Structure formats: structure tokens, C-alpha cells
Image (cartoon, rainbow, N blue to C red; front, side, top):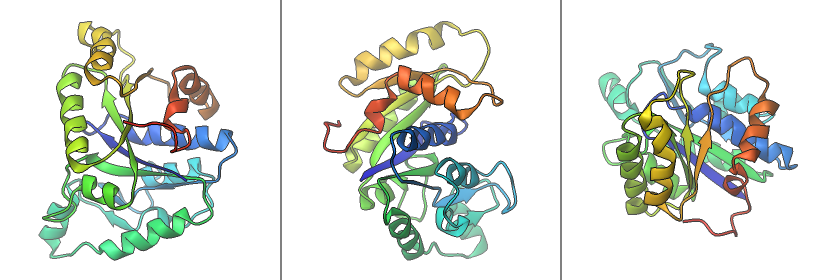
Length: 235
């Protein structure tokens, strides 16, 4: 089974969109898949822009939203912070149960974190620990802008320190604006700095484009390495 965890180098770098693309690529290859956003923050239950709903739909819309998103927190804060403010406690067992249920009968699963890899879920647990516990390979989404080198290198180092396998880095163009010198040089620099980890470019795509359009571009840009059988080498 292909088990992928998605994290970002920071917020608003396109994690959810990349997650839907990975799910779409696996379905295109005939796989039965599930998407999961274990903890979603900063939205209401009926928000059509919910990351969890988008992941569920990309996976085929077969699963209950309560499995795809076991915990919803309306404040746009780290889970540990918002739970501490309300006196709540994270039910890790509920997350584990939902994850195991989504894995049943599936060939692949994509689990998206909220924010970056070290965002705290509890005082002693961040996304890196949860992903290790669920035996996920990591896909890092980096926004292609000034600062991407530092943010990406820090995230890769944190992943390796936690014992996570990094499947690849997606360098995502987050703006339709004409690229500056940082945007034009980030890909080559990261590819050299992170070798042999694949660094894959992904262009900015208009929201009205169909998913198949994005899947074609992803296939052209080498995303097959991210959805290949786990027995193939990862770093």
C-alpha cells in the first residue's frame, strides 16, 4: 500500500491541491485510494473550501467526512494551541481508528497535515511523530518564492531527524505573476542541494482548469515517482 503524508514548508503553499493531484494520479492508475485530513483548522463544517472535502472528493467521495476529518477546529491555530485555549484534549486513538478504517481495502492513502511538519498537535507530538507512527512516506510541498531554499532544507532535515522517508519535494508555483530571480533559480538549487531526493516543479494552474489537465502536467513533470510502489527506492 502506498502511504503518503503531505506537509508544507509553510502555510498557503498548495498542499491540498498537490494532495488531490496525487490521489488523481493513483486513481488514474487503477488504484483504490483514500484522502485524509486528520485535523482541519480554521474552517467551519459546511465550508465548501474545506481541504478535507476536496481530498475526499479527489479520492472518489466514498468515505464519511468524519473519517476523512476526525477533528475540526474552527480557530486558525496550531491544534495544541486551540485545544489548550478551550481546555480540550486531542483524542489520538480516534485519529488512529479513522486512519486504519480508511486504509482497509485501499491501495493508497494521502494524509495531509495542517501547516508545517513541526506544528504541535499536543505538547509532545507534532505531525512528524504522527506520520512516523502511521508509517507514511513524506511529500514536501514548497512554495516557489524567495525563502524556499531555507524552508525546504529545514523541513527535510526535520523529516530525516524524525526518521521519515522523503519521497520527494514539489516546488509549487503559487502565483501567476512573472517569476523573479529566486523563482527562476530555486529548482536547480534545490535539486543539487537535496540530491538524490527528487525535486519536481509544478506550475501555477487556474482554478477553473479540470483536474485531468493538472494530472497530465504532473505526469510530464515526473510525479510518477511519488505514487510508485513503496518497494521502489525512496530517500
